[in-house]
Length: 250
Image 1 (cartoon, rainbow, N blue to C red):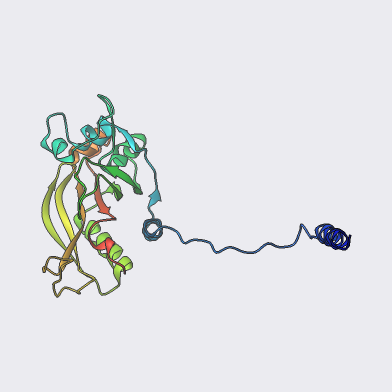
Image 2 (tube, rainbow, N blue to C red; image 1 turned 120 degrees about the vertical axis):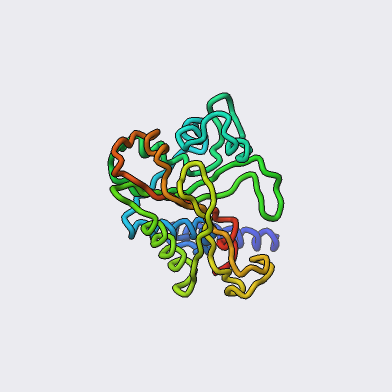
């Protein structure tokens, strides 16, 4: 009998406690996670280029063969197609191998107009995954088209971006290279942020790390995308974010 009374008393106290519960009381705040490092880096790159007058554009990861290859001066049978190791979905659709496919999409809709575009996204290649290769990675692609754009505009843009990202003391060097969609073409190296040019395992004892490919847009690409006025020229560049210098904390 005594035990029953004690239990009933506990039950009543519990009911009263529930009735007095304030449903509008502020709950316990949970910690919010940070953005992914790649998202933070893309946001920072976007901020830099928006200050330079570039517009952000997006393109689909499933791309047409025309936009990914043909319009970019890589017709059927071009050896660069084999080098890309492409995931084909059918005879015309594929997983894009490069964010450079944004160029035909934008330029064909704005023929003979001044354009500045920056774009980021995932690209896919049939690489064997190892320490330096993955079948999926992130690229940032940018291009500008206007009247009388020269190589000096490209070099100045690249220098500014590297200094903004890696510090004002950082330098770049340009090495001649080949890309079907640019002429002339260059590989862009930056001083290794790990050893500051002294040589380490990250930079393979060279003091430099390759960070981007760049060049002036090939005249044939401009023609393929509807630019008939010879006064229009352009610059283009692409950074791989998971590779090279951007994989090192800074």
